[in-house]
Image (cartoon, rainbow over all chains, first blue to last red; front, side):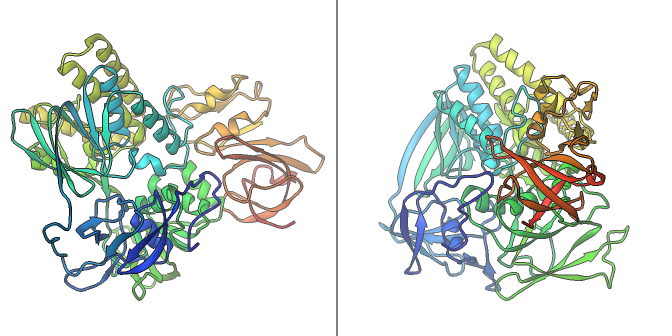
Length: 479
Length: 133
């Protein structure tokens, strides 16, 4: 059974029927409903591609289709993101050589479709789902696409209970919030598809976007309004051998262990003690992984004390002013070298310590997934408080491109509660703009703004609020 | 008595809503909660309600030399009544023994575990480690 988790204190893994997939001809057992990477990982295959120039083995890194580390040839389709593609019985999976080869004519069946809609929502995480549900309930015709096998964004892997107001989603686990949103989505008339990526923006009478579904179907979407809620991607950290299989983004590890129930490793080092690092550290322990320590370059733990306390009382040391100096291992990480930092962030020689680990989780921040917005021509600015380059936008989350909105992490790294409020605001704004129930939409908009403000009243939000104000100011200057 | 180890300005309020004795108050959505010990009965409803797993209940009147500590617990195996575990302090260091007195599994997965420890450890023990017996 390899590293599949069958007992978990919080989660129940309901696996589909057993199927067989073939990796370069070798039969591998899998379960319906799991991704190719999950199935391969559970069978002990931890490298999915090799670097083009130096032929180094690559593991998955992000686990959500954003980093291109797991591209393989699947049923003759080259460059398939195997971390977000579900297994099918008899599936033919091959390692690619170099950059892969195009399929020959007839090997892959290609379909086409056209969709015309009031609103296209790109990305079905907390922001996109909230935008969709709000707009659809106000009578807007909505089409939402998500590139993962199931909607819900990062909520589907959050086993911890959320903070927040009892009047919204507080004290409910992220996985439950995702289920609630999905149920609400199903009750609307919105049309939604998964395994579908928006790959480009084109000039048209309306907003015109190309969406590719199931790696084989091209959908041309014409929309009056667009909400881009594509989330974020995980940051890499520079250190020798940081590309070894076994070194993954914290979110990728969460996907593997909490969505697909695969134990990611036996002994772990977590780099970063912000809320993501603290939470993933705790979740690793719940999945039966021995978490040796967390290292944090800052002089203080960045995340909430209550999250840190959960780890500390289980005996997990959190070393501040420490970072990872290097990883080592043959084809897979076997050891991490950690080192202490001085006040100038320089490594102090002689403080190195070797830690035997087969898993290193990087929780060193996120960068907004803004690529589509920039390609569409939305003006951008680099705002460090928001995590990087973002499409500048106003308080109503409209970018410099008329009718194109942002919501959630793509508009600045924050968290799921604020993402849901931003989603609601954009959904209500779209309803107003396309002439639906104005009074009702205004009310939702006002309430969401009020709640967003309450969420951001904490000193922990000062930084992001500063960034947001920059984005709003830039928008006014540019418009 | 409920002991709330939540000291930061987290925008969060379920603890204030769960307490039917109105013993937990938040002066604002982001300010940390404060317990009114004249009203707190030590019922423990708040233990599983805190998303940060930061509420504990301490009962110093259990026995002459023993106190009860109630903790939220989300790991496997779920402890059983009568078992003895290492009692861990806030740093995860074993400081004594904890005899499990009661376990309530809340429907969303969090177990609320009540254990008897030496009275001097009542404000020290906050988790359990290895099972001893």
